[in-house]
Image 1 (spheres, rainbow, N blue to C red):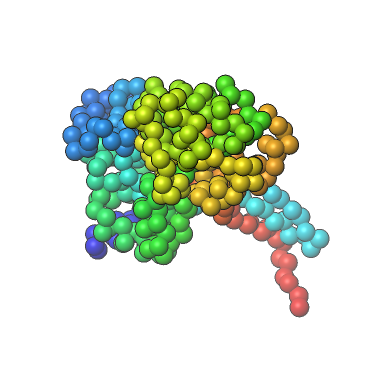
Image 2: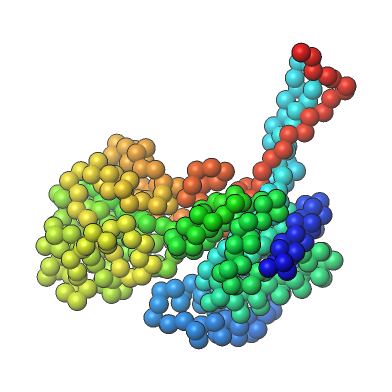
Length: 417
């Protein structure tokens, strides 16, 4: 226990010097890391293969853990894209000269020490370090045991890169995967500035309920799409298919389709492409009746109450029939995790009403929920999708890893009574 705490203290101490690096130096570190990643595929894939042997290949979560040459090249490209972004660290955000001559400047600064607890996505190991390096933050990484070999291999690349640039190695720390060690991290008041959990609802709940340090909730997505009475069928079919099947293990994947009762006749067309992916549908009575005989019987089930408000992370989809847009919104309010919600409609007034009423980090009109992603928003890599409202919301990238401080310059002013 003391060793873990001592290492966290070392990260805090190292963070002060790391914050002083200029952007040219930080970019050089990231460039070296990208190059090392491109030349280390064999070692990384061997480590990843060890982790994969302990996971059921039929599990959708298997895809989260899986790395291959294309994905590694994609991660390297993402690192290079971050290099080309402009960091706002030390940027003057505001400047005001007061009547008494004081000049008050608002300046962007790093958060300090950023801790991320995550599950089976080894790419997060690099994403977090890259974004933290670009914004002068030290980082603590705590991945799950299912990806430990891969995470350790990737972390060794980070450490080799830091050594090559004569940077204190303690600016990045990979914690052991033991869950009990999380308690030490979550109680590190004064040493860790923020903790970001990335994973399922159970992990997020655990961190929120046990943390004494600030937490930004990310990850869990209970995602809905509402097909309105004025929706266009072909647009709806493509959006539903892409939102559900592009990658079922990600947090922006569609979980529940809401359909206006006047459009039930179009439901077989709307879900037609899902058959190719063997998506199991859990339909309410009205939707079930519309699909019976039009969707494979072995993939069509009667919905139960527990099927709504569930993040499936699998080739499964719930369908609920609603009588109005207000009924759709009420359902979303009841079950949403405030991640990503969508409406499919050709009625601009209805779309505007939906975007105003639905409270989520990202609200879509006639577009797939698969776009909830930092890179797709032009932000480079992301550290997570925040589902809360304080500090950051939606895809969290460079700006979300900064705060600000006020610098007041005077010429001897004092304050009277």
